[in-house]
Image (cartoon, rainbow, N blue to C red; front, side):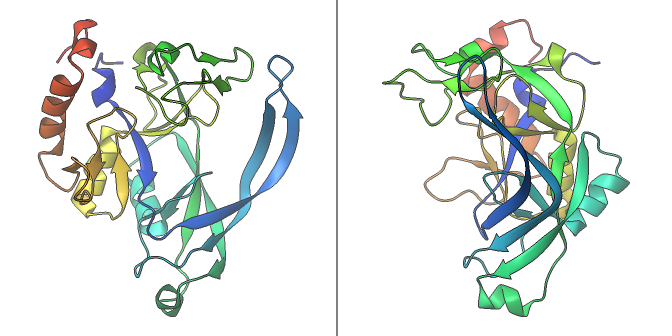
Length: 247
């Protein structure tokens, strides 16, 4: 595998909350970790369903959901035809639509994406105030007064652990971030897919379709998004370029 700079190889992948969705999945099992006692819930993406909220007026290419990645069939069809790796697309049933405008447009086809690719992260980069990660179930336990209690200081993938998949989840942290490769963002830019957000796990380098006014973000619809993002990463996180990775 080619040696590449980590923060320009894997990008956090999620959707802007418009419209939002509530996801229902089958519980396979629920147990407590023998090491730290954290509750561990395992769910199945098969036969999953969603309720769509009242916001938005168009069916987006990605639906924001806390517990899963939900993509429209036009996106799924492209990533399959382009040969992207690291995922299984499961058809998703829409049980309820809380928006009259969306309901009038008919039921679209969405899939919940089961991400099969894996990568480890440097847990020492998550915070610098004494938090820990359980070595058995990988549940994070932030320090009591941790300013990063509900977020991370920085998420840094260890490239030697990446299996090379275009869609990837963190292996050594529960409730890990969804990642995608540059290939997927290039497709989003080319096809002008709506409502994606990329790269928010590394502060200061977010990619939006159109960033809100209060956010200093770049547009992934810009054909030069990668070049501009590279410059921003160098400025925002110069210490990472001192680790021997090529610029």
